[in-house]
Length: 116
Image (cartoon, rainbow, N blue to C red; front, side, top):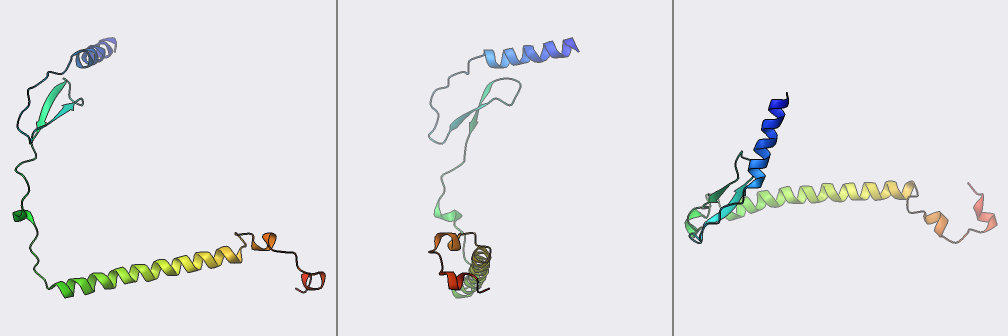
């Protein structure tokens, strides 16, 4: 038990006791990232690859109007359902007097107060 604990502390001291090596500037695509998750502190160079050009743009394979109409129908359905939820929740809030409209309004006359 003590040996395993000691070896873990020794690894941590070795990892955090070292300074990262400084490297000269590479190409403009290289980004250096310090990897602290490994057992040793080391630098990794992440190369994202060649610059993105228009060759990587997706090529449409369906008519624009067809896709637009399908998406517009879906978005209109989402809009109608969300407006329905808004109306129902606002109606429930008014029914339960969440906005305390009766408490904030002027008092009713004595004749009209006890009609219910």
